[in-house]
Amino acid sequence: MAPSAMSRTEWTESLSEARPVPYWLDDPGRPRPEPALTGAETCDLLVVGGGYSGLWTALVAKERDPQRDVLLVEGREAGWAASGRNGGFCAASLTHGLPNGLTRWPGEIHRLEELGARNLTEIERAVARYGIDCDFERTGEIDVATEPHQARELRDWYTRIQGEGLADGVEYLDAEAVREQVASPTFLAGLWDRRGVAMLNPARLAWGLKRACLDLGVRIHEHTPALTLKPYGAGMAVRTPYGQVRARQVALGTNVFPSLVRRVRAYTVPVYDYALMTEPLTAAQLASVGWRNRQGLGDSANQFHYFRLSADNRILWGGYDAVYPYGGRVRAEYDDRPETYAKLAGHFFTCFPQLEGVRFTHAWGGAIDTCSRFSAFFGTAHRGKVAYAAGYTGLGVGATRFGAEVMLDLLAGERTERTELEMVRRKPLPFPPEPFAWTGIALTKWSLARADAHGGRRNLWLRTMDRLGLGFDS
Image (cartoon, rainbow, N blue to C red; front, top):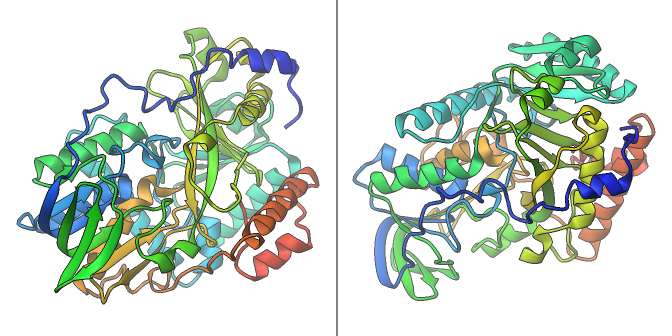
């Protein structure tokens, strides 16, 4: 993006009153946590993790078998981590976007797209069935080009997916058409996926899923971290600070946090993502931007931004920086990064110069569980008594429900259309130990920034990563 006419001082002034807390979690309607687990408990299914992955698993388990005794433990509070900090893009894609899926699983891509569309519909139905007030809007998403080479690539990609029979519901927009949807002088073209993405309030979705689980009889204990996982008789035992749970089966939805199955830990690394939220736009400000159809948007750079309108007409603006901490540690201190906020503010006013003077009210970050193929992987441990899903790489708002179905299929020992997928049967490459992981990720980030500055041309490092199946496209 070309520099904004505003000065850096004006960018940073827009942040002067921004609170370093996630906007979605800063909600007076936030539910009270359930009591911590104390003493010994038993259950049929223990779910570890109170984000989307764990909540969907518990909910779908009770839907499949209302008599199953399901218990869920969460280390902090339901939805406090990635599930309450993301942009609220609920995508049908199970593969972190069609380009990634078509590259990795070309023989399965039509089935993966069909399963993803069905999964998004099931989420929409669950929101309605359980009365979840999460501002669900199935508006779609526009991928926008902000550089000439990106516009050419979008056009070429649209031609390709038409030829593959994968363009249903997708519309190509030239510069005039995309600016009619959302007015930015930086937009040169766009691809509008009209049906494959919904916008929602991510924290309220998590809280609504928690309430639905409780209503179906799931026992939930918050402020109850799972410390160890060991075999116990015919089942498993999980130790917590004040007690223990013995369960016939365990589903792990811990994602970015270290897995209780140690061999799984090498498959994910935490990458920190950051976002800003503006004050509500006035009617005049909103009119200057357009955005009548309220789609989610993302630009086409390697270091990309994602942005959308909230229900009260604020703009969430996030992305670009993806920060990997040396050693892959998840720490609260990494959730706040003023230097990234200043950078994002400058990019925001470059995209929307007509919004000069708008202030940001919230600025926050959080960790994403990233794997080397950028989409979830699955597996079992302890002779099929434990199942796990992880590696959603920032696209888990929708895909975690599919992951819940996969974990429950695996625990049941069932062969289903989900468990037969190559995506489910095979795992990504693990990350190397330090210092190689940090060095490789740093070199990749440098190379991606260089490609963005040089017409999208990928250097030898990126081309090598592409050949190894490790090609970063976001």
